[in-house]
Length: 328
Image (cartoon, rainbow, N blue to C red; front, side):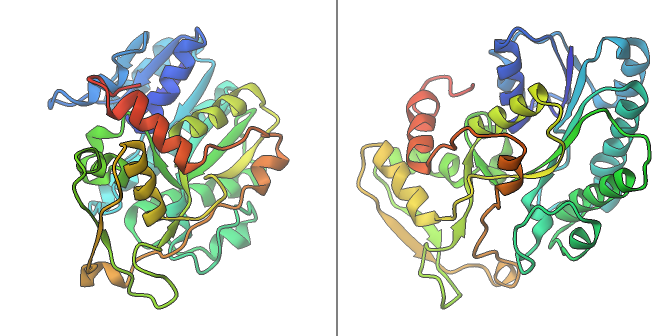
């Protein structure tokens, strides 16, 4: 049995679906909420239990012997979160406690980090595991700081010889898009946010560039399809020798204009993009470029190709967004 924290969330519910398709028993730790939306992310998967986070410690005491591995995706993931005490409790303390549990019980541990740890990108996007290199990164928000804090704690624990899980990996997710992100609302990808407009042939608004090096809509991101993220998690579970903190992007920087154009094409509509001013409050913290260095993951043995945005967006539209039930 594999424990997936945050299992009803975006990336995690896709991992749950993959594991269930493989015939794996899965326990989800998450809150499903009272809005009648999030539970649908699990509606196609035959899971064994849903455990509220406040009951997780007791569950591990009673049923921990049956847990083969922990995939820790649960976190407060909003980049606009401001309750630091709650973020520390959810994003650092729980991560540390699960690391320690896996270490004590000799269970593999995979956890979600984030590309938000790179801040404005001034130090590049190299997923070095050296403590000195990690210390140079300066996240721009509370969420990114909490993920960065745990990454640094993990590396210190490993380098100091502290008891650790028999295999472990942290994944710095870049700009992930795909099915089951609908509950995220304002935190959804621009694909999910703009699908209805593109399908109707209506205009889509993108931010103007306020950096002379980038044209309007030319701001670059490493967009990665969620199914590729799932494949990497499957690889790590199957290959315990692959350990460390790894970037998880496509390894290519593409523009928002490219992404929205791919969405229009997938909807059978000509692109109609309008550019609007970026809010003043966002301009000082805006990232114009991200691109995951994928060398470490490749060196660890992962050799599957990553999906292009054209193919990923088309699959997302045809198999999910255009369907009556868009969930994976």
